[in-house]
Length: 246
Image: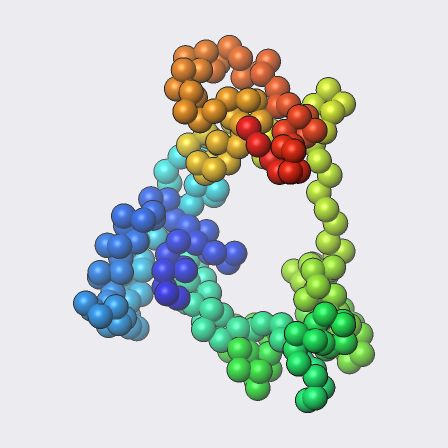
């Protein structure tokens, strides 16, 4: 599972172009036996990984397919192993409570502390090529009380732990002064249509009151109407139960 999480892409390692479901099955068959146990390791596994990560991700290349340079390929392997180790052991934020208090009770009553440890909760030394605690200590100038509070703020998603900036909701986009939903406006010039996910494209159509089933009928006039066919306002997309509906 750790290797597949890297194969399909994650926050640290974008998915290589072409690595979809079909190639994932092929990849699994190459590194594991009939029972699903991984049988490849070390250099053997690294070479297999390299053979499936030759191309950059779609997000990295808006011009279409592009093979990684040797330096990019080596960096990709480093990121793969880094990500895999993090999936195995952390670091992760972990709730701590008084011995007599259940975690659920402490969470609901907001009477808990947060630590940054490995998944076992026993180790704060991480061997991933970086010290996970160092950025927190640096921004808090070593003040343990402030570090603990910063852990809590990151855990509650009040602060983004990558930059330690406050997390703020993205404002809704507007068209002609009226609010529309996120995802109802896509830039097909900056990013090719085929690089967007199916769900996102279906929502884009729904925001223009076009069912995906009839999308083929509007394909031939797409060039003409794209600039004129604007998404409808949020209040018109809300169903009687408050949900979004085409």
